[in-house]
Picture (cartoon, helix red, strand yellow):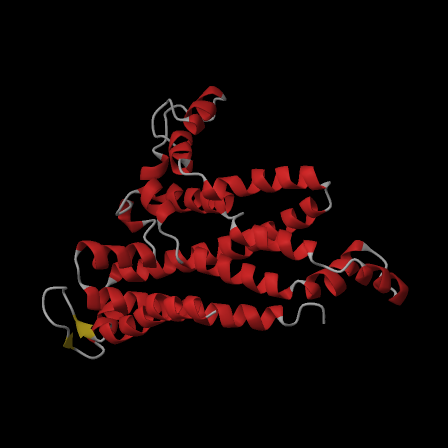
Length: 280
């Protein structure tokens, strides 16, 4: 494990630690970092109105997509696990494919195109629901629901595969022992045998879903633009990209990254505590 741990420490742990220190400085990539204390954080929460919008959008997005995508991953994995091996492999590919498709955003741009040739507009006009096409991705009230919908469609990724793998490793003799001990139906099997037997996969899936839901950026940028209309799709990560790769205010960007890291760690700790109670 030494090579992996060395690379992990150099390229993951060390940058996180450096980012925390840089967040207390003014650093524009040209001058040596200058210590300014808590000014970046006070600016974030007291002066940066766009960041407050980004926090609101990110938390709303995570609260909706995180639990829904997590449950969807497990439910579909649980259903697919009972299929015959060849059919199970085929269905796993079908569900997993959207998360690795390169042109997936182009497909949704076609669906929600703002002219009459867009699939959604064309269908609704043909049905008589609309008279004129809607600018789906340029209208503030529609942007966030569309992004949430697309992210849910993309959510059957690594966590879904982890659940499939976890279900395959459950000892089948446990179900026989459970029947002897009074387990009467599939729901009791699920709660008392299946879920406790795959706690590592449940934990891994939770971390993946939390991280992906809080680190949302690509869907927002590709569909709603950068920046989006009235920052309707602004998230913490897109705000970080703005200051880190466009304005090169690295100290301020590091403060944003530190806030996001703290939010992720805190959420993961809460979820881990909840998952420890599974099967009790």
